Length: 191
Ligand code: AMP
Image (cartoon, rainbow, N blue to C red; front, side):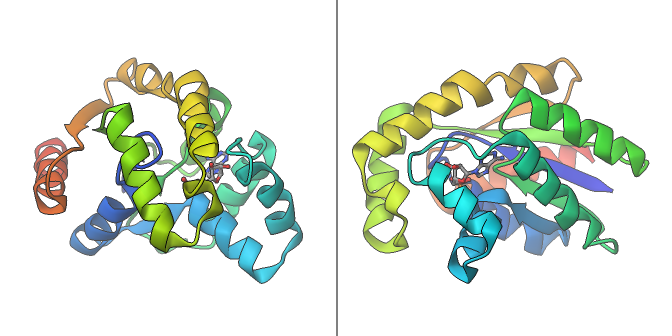
């Protein structure tokens, strides 16, 4: 199985790139942010809970997020592999993912981390906010909070995967096509 962690700060382009990679490699795309947003739309209890965190730019608690992610993996039992987008975001999530995949006799193949500097992220997110309808993309304060949470809780996962020799940084600035090419080159070299 090919299980990719597509990593990067908010606005790095994970969703855009994941959509292109799933087509080429026939993987299932699991974006925890997308799953939370569809729960919010459907008015589920999970959506209501998630919204209270998302609206502040804070992380949804680990046990909720991990349970949801595991249920999604379980409901795709025929998958050839997964692209995890926006997950894991904490050390506890990364450890839970390792244990969960190991219980299924598989593992994270590698992490591809899109590298984009902070000014570019803020510009991109505010631009996306004009059309995405996402409240968390429209407020500079919430955006800064999300980037801060990334720095404080999420960026450390680069070291987590580097310690397993699974971390690969990819240039995340340029045309969408050129970034996809960089990701594909890395994947094709690694598999
Ligand atoms: P995203 O679409 O990945 O930018 O995620 C949007 C929001 O959903 C984040 O700011 C968090 O509030 C929440 N979220 C998404 N993925 C996670 C995760 N793995 N752990 C905790 N919260 C998450």
